[in-house]
Image 1 (spheres, rainbow, N blue to C red):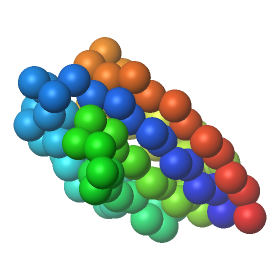
Image 2 (tube, rainbow, N blue to C red):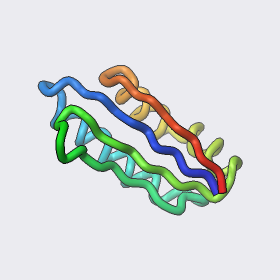
Image 3 (cartoon, helix red, strand yellow):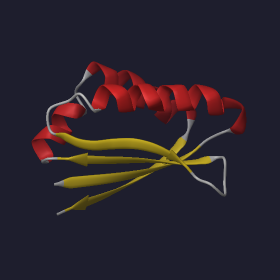
Length: 91
């Protein structure tokens, strides 16, 4: 299994658009084969920080995810609007 924790720093004035984009990415990603969990969480002490947590069955599932049209569109949009740092764990 693979876990990705993606820390997202946003501009407050773009918060609603970023939340909508992240929620669309979560909804579509949860339907993918090999997706075990996918969620977006707001930091309770800093409204400009979010965490996207993804759990994938294996490297193949994660690689396939990164090739989907929704990932390319929505993650690309998030990358353009935010600062992101990903940490990858395997188990």
